[in-house]
Image 1 (cartoon, chains in turn red, cyan):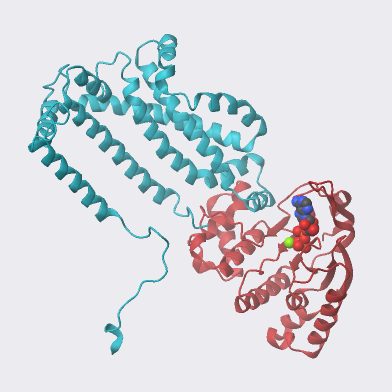
Image 2 (tube, chains in turn cyan, orange):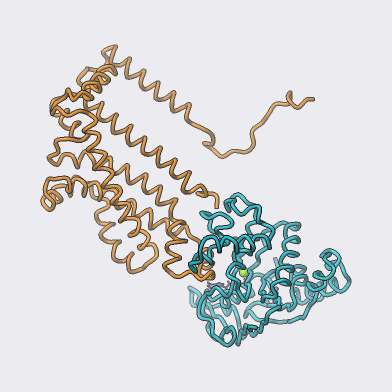
Amino acid sequence: MSILEVKNLSVNYAGSNGKNTLALSNVDLIMQPGDFVVALGASGCGKTTLLSCIAGFMQPSEGSISIDGKLVHGPGAERGVVFQKHALMPWLSVVENVEFSLRMRGMGKAERRAIAMDKLKLVELEKYADSPIYQISGGMQQRAGVARALASDPAVMLMDEPLGALDALTRAHIQDLIVDLWWQTQKMFFFITHSVEEALFLATELIVMTPSPGRIAHRFKLDFSKQFVECRDSRAVKSSAAFIEMRETVLSLIHDAPGTHHG
Amino acid sequence: MAKDTVKTVKGYSIPGEGSSVLISVVTVIALFTLWWTATHMGWIRDLFLPTPEKIASAFMAAMRGDIQGGKALPEHLLWSLIRVFSAFFLAVLTAVPVGIAMGVSRTMRGVFDPPIEFYRPLPPLAYLPLIVIWFGIDESAKIILIFLACFAPLAMAARAGVRSVTIEQINAAYSMGASKWQVVWHVITPAALPEILTGMRIAIGFGWTTLVAAEMVAATEGLGQMVLNASNFLRTDIVIMGIIVIGLVAYLFDLLMRKLEQILVPWKGRA
Ligand SMILES: Nc1ncnc2c1ncn2[C@@H]1O[C@H](COP(=O)(O)OP(=O)(O)O)[C@@H](O)[C@H]1O
Ligand SMILES: [Mg+2]
């Protein structure tokens, strides 16, 4: 049982011309196993900054991040990250990429290969284990990225717009896959998107963020992903009356938010 | 069906696309024909440019050791190869780590930047006397001269190659529990490999360029020495033959390096 706490987090970026950017202001967030938190908001509202702090890529100006009460000071294998641009190593094959964290830990070849193949099966990529990264499609690259993050068995999965560059069909397919992964592993997920539909479908807790200064403006508890787990029909979930109503609610919140730049 | 009667078209292409091998072959044949004609018609005096046949017979004579100095061509070639390649490998072993260190560490960059940037543009002939004074006239002076010529471009290439890594790749590695050293070895070095290989091709070219200068230092064997010696006796045929041999060997090595690039960095330009 672990718990991730973001307390009173603020990030003030130093600008080159003396103009600072308050990218995050007093953000609080608590996550427990089985929570799927989705951060939704327009570009520039601090989503990536929040994820970078949780991942440990940067230190906040104020506030803290802790896992089970232990403060986070840098990146670590208990927090797996999936990036928008895949960030895989092109000199390694798909399965070698997935093995990377285990190899860094000094695990033997046979053992780590078995674990990596296991993760590849979870993302339906086992047939492409030996393919070079640059020969598989964008959707496959993102799935490989997910398998790679899973390999070190992290407590939290941090995903920054991982499906942003994919076509609608591929995107919907991988959304289903991510819900299944979340349900099977009961890990904590922190997922960034600017697609309202994607956010509603995945989240158990939706946080709507607004810019200047970046903060959490609204929070919703949702259960559309659980509905999908039960009925296995994502189109039915996404076209249900409750889903459409929620979508309109959230869309109006985003559009009416002060400081939001359209276009 | 009309399938075969419809004329085929090409898709989009960027300027300069396609193979240029045939054009190169034609160019070489044309140059050779011009050479043959110019020498046989007496447009150029034998002293300036001998006929191709004379070069061929100079080659046969050199193979037998039937030239000034009495050493056979393979022996000259072997000595030159040993010098160029031992200097080159020494440079790869030292310049690549130095270049990567310069790319990843502010301190290392501060330390190595001034000396390398200072000696890099100097012509090897300018510091050759100094090396002779310091290291004498034996093999080490020659190898050091070629080594210095190879070192700078290799270090520059490795340093530039470090920039090929993306911040996401580095962050991803840290998130997977890698240490700083593991990031340097398992992420930054492979990411820099395409540039390092390009640097190796440039460096070995510099190595061959410096060979003749190196073999001016009291050598009794070596291709550069053979050419220099022949020029003292106005043996234009042996000079040209030596130049062709150096050119061919360097070209063969470059082909080998390109093959190595395809094997080692097939992702180059595709990721
Ligand atoms: N390294 C940085 N230096 C200065 N400002 C930054 C930096 N990174 C992000 N910002 C600014 O902080 C704000 C939030 O950025 P970001 O977290 O990337 O938002 P999002 O991911 O929601 O698009 C933006 O105004 C952006 O311009
Ligand atoms: Mg972002």
